[in-house]
Image (cartoon, rainbow, N blue to C red; front, side):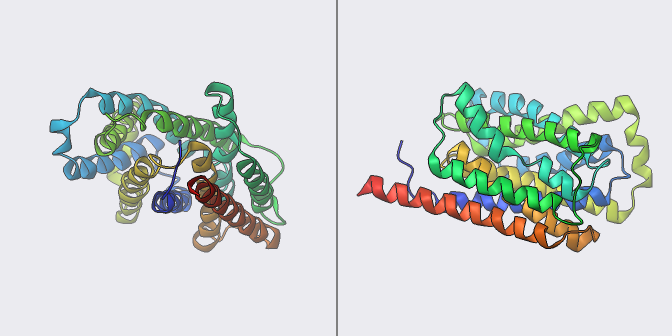
Length: 299
């Protein structure tokens, strides 16, 4: 299928990646708050805002988008549980790297399960990106060569994130798919499952001790890093192939690492900055290659 005029949708995905990048230092900032208090509150506000925005669509939408939201929401719930717990046991810099290995995992999943051929430009871009991400997290003072519990949990989160991209790429092509309804159900599903976990673990008892700053951080995560970012992904991925989406989302760890340095004073040496630059270069290379290929198909 020819894919032309995807620049706007690529920009939407880049903005989503930037918003997710801000979630790492923000989540690290409130790491003392119980996981199953953060997640239900975060996704309650995300679902509430989106439900108000897209309330009229529910009258016209069929069950397809609802079923997709429930199924993918369960997968995404695991991502956020792993990521939110994992960041408590590792640095924000490392968490932003290990949670965002989509650029490597998505092409493998597509090749194995959907027989999607790996394009040369994506393979080269992924190679450059891998070098950049290695330097980003292991350069000089930043990162460690040993994986701790937090790192491993964030890797598991990345597997679920990659699966989300592959599944969304498939379901969003259906003409019955409604972006707004899907995203509302997605957020509500995560809220419901994590709220049940919060009731079971007694995490809601800590709500009374939340400071205004902590509540504000959770609200930011809900409105911008959840409602806003996932809506941008749902819209953007309708026109951008999933292999490219995985690579575009590698901007997430770069922004996460830089913001962790600026906001949390986590160490980041010269090699780490070079790594961040390589990640940006890999995205630029892949997108320019895609634009050239689209132009050649039209000529």
